[in-house]
Length: 82
Image 1 (cartoon, rainbow, N blue to C red):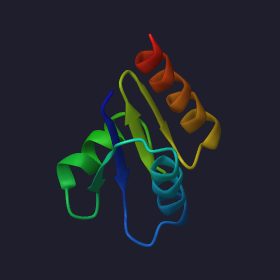
Image 2: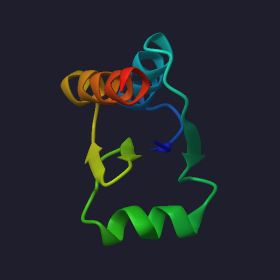
Image 3: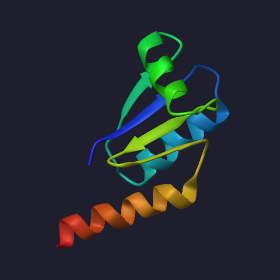
């Protein structure tokens, strides 16, 4: 499953999210919304006003959500273990 973190500079919750994903050995792409205005507009079109915004398959959320990161780990384990 592709994971994208829409982030911005100097964002504590963004950094915490990226650290948590890395700690769980989940691959993810980071898109800096301060440099990519199309990404910023996309995130706003989803109704989000807080960074980070995480897109993981059909699921998406904003803010630092360790509970949802844990669900991603469990979903990845189910895929790997069949």
